[in-house]
Length: 99
Image: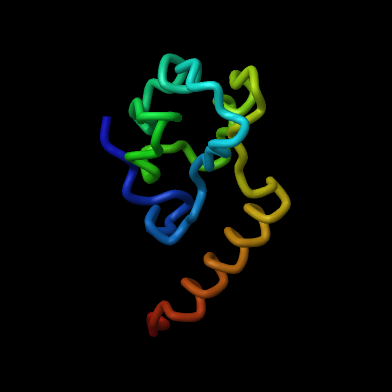
């Protein structure tokens, strides 16, 4: 599956929403790899690797809930909302006015 190119009109590559794996907590059980249908993860030597971060669905953190060791984290939803508002405002200000 390839990542979406935009989210709410914002280019997906401008949105840093993807999982971060704490290798000190990860037991390399593979739950995240088995759970995520978007091929965000790939097996690694000591822990899975995030190989397709832009395939991660913006706002989805279900893999973190599936992780039995709590090794997966994301930015907070509050931070995400603030970032999306800022990016949408920047896009609106950069858009040329139609007259």
